[in-house]
Length: 530
Image (cartoon, rainbow, N blue to C red):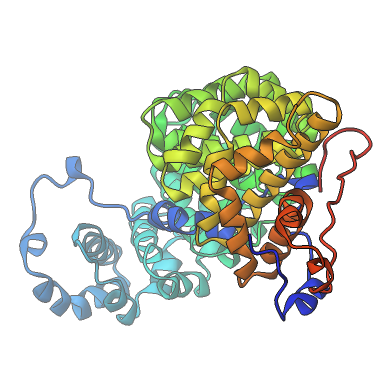
């Protein structure tokens, strides 16, 4: 055993701080935790390009069948038609621009912008005497705004946002729906674009169209745009998006997968906030339906549902209990047991970790529903991303659990996989596992003091049998000071007596440190360890 402090001990002790705050084990969404998943899902859906209507374009014109190069050669004449004073020429040219941007695999958005037609197309949005021209101009601008942020900025800088918001009150269904789509692309581009759309009062007009009389296509587009108005960091001012909560509650009752998916994403964005905002989500009455949707067969719905539930249970114990009372735990168990994709299981584990960070009654609810065995199995056998979340869930349970609950965790085999993760490359997870093992060792010491164990500390022996002691010793050489200090603390407290027993007499004073055993005292109020 290598308990001898080295030359950097004093300096490292001075820099020591607690590695894991187990008194507040709940975790908000972490940027690095969702970065890849976010880029895959949200970057693909935050903007949408509208393609051609097949039913209206069954017979292709010579223009449509020509090569892109030929079409680009026609841009000057098309632009001339847009700037013409002739209504028919304006419409014909605008339709050609719309088709160019909606039928090409890689639409030449930049070429269209360089032709100079964007300000003229924005003018056409106000042509209340010519609804078809409004519609075609709106469609063309929608597809320009579906491009890069610079493309979107061109549309915004020419005053399109207030014009599109005004079109939400158009008497023509197709014009209103196209305006909704365009505003969704602008809001989805950036927090600045989102706030601009919100600042022009788009939300109230948008919500007015989201009723039982709306066409399904309008509801789908409006729900998607609403989700973009709620997304992004920094988050939108909550007072601006609060009116959406009742509507989102109604949208959750839809049977349409696309509407459900975007409504749940909107709620996931709004619930990723402080406890007072979480309470507003709860007060909107959506939690019961969210628990039901944890059983939805579609992964596209499940991912935002589980994330929303996970956000809600980052709140305080009472807020967490709301989801427990609605039966979320059996549904989360089912997500772990069924062959769902890894991202869903990871979200489920994250949600469970925030429930095990609650009080001992909530830890007991997790135990009683049968979640511990599959968590331990993931901790032992899953990919690292899942092991990471399972480690948090297990350690949080040891932090807030009773002696009986911790014994149950140990009986289910949590010690060995926690020990195995001590060699993982993620310092945070190493610290989390050390925290879990320390909580287990404290419980073992308490069991012994109550006469429930014949050995000095049965759990210490189990850690040693799992090769955990060797791994803890090696952590004395870890570059991370928090991990180093935690490892030294555990060795000093739970294994130094064995070291002292084998030392020749007179060696105790050589190191300058006294490694006498430290009896851990039981904290008042139970095992809520920090």
